[in-house]
Image (cartoon, rainbow, N blue to C red; front, side, top):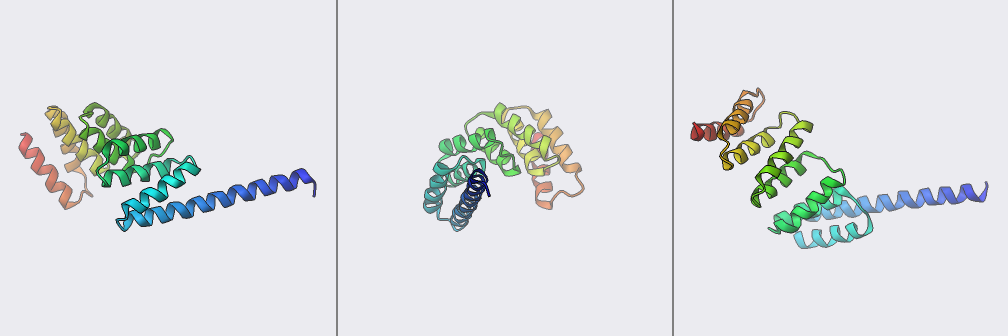
Length: 171
């Protein structure tokens, strides 16, 4: 086998091992997060973040920071995660929550709307947008979202009740 081919194979194997090790470290960090070991999770995830550029790792660092009430730092990590292409449902929920906490209502609405473009009919995103519209004094838009939400056939009882209570307060 030519030397160049051997080097290519070695490089490929090395890269795969690096990815496997990163996945193991991420898994360990997430287990710590689930157990409530926020310090351990922070240490593990930030060490991994120094080794690899990963939108997923940045999101979970941000989530960990949210749970530790470090919303400014959480915002920076979650936003960076989004910029790197992470687009899971909870990112849109968490990012819009932090934006609303900071009074960035317009940005929160944009984040939720972007999330709804990808996750059509998600009841949490729609309800959260109605809440933010309410906080902005845009009651008609809030009621419109609530009417849409209430019309869903598969809405949970809890969400239906929350939507109806908010709608009643707005009318």
